[in-house]
Length: 314
Image (cartoon, rainbow, N blue to C red; front, side, top):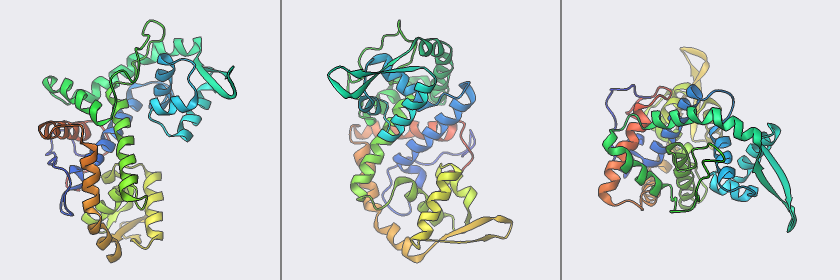
């Protein structure tokens, strides 16, 4: 990523093939999420993850919730929510009991062990949220949070009143969770408008390769804000479609040089109008003037934080 102090990209909504990927709101959100994850890894001890903390926050606010409600409020898909619940149950942080009105349904609550653990973990997680917003001027932080809340489609009162005296958690209105929720909103719109033919990360990979011909696969992941495993999976899938060619990197025998095929280039140009529609849908809750400020601040979070290296010209 761009080092602190380097030039940031413009933040206009994508409207053509020539528009940098770093100006696409959905990309900025995913990159901001990567910044959050890096900060979390540095500041939060132990092996608790952001999704696990989100589930704990849901159960602190809504005890005796079932997995479906937990998945919705924690902004997780059903599979991820089930995995998180299973991991927390193995730690003895969650107890399960059958719903007396429906024996097929389990109700979940936090244990005393969870309360003790949260007391020591929450201050570090609070530090993550502070660090995430530290790149913004203090005069913009409240407005940014209000705008992020709107983009994340969080309705007033949706998350209830957090019982801080019972469980010491931050709740689900912190910037890190709202960024993940906004990413979920973007993914939903993307799937709807793209008819499931291409995912957001796949589009990012194609755009990066299109603007950086013969890029090394390792650098590709850094530019597209993707981890190595995800990058490899996407490259394999797109190569299988005949959209990417791979050649051995002459400077690294284990590396691969990637190039778009003509078919991919033509198809990529054809979908830019749909990409623009997705971004417009994402920002619909904001007035035009708000969008300018929000995207400028989001770019600061995405590029002035502490994530892996990449550059702003993609």
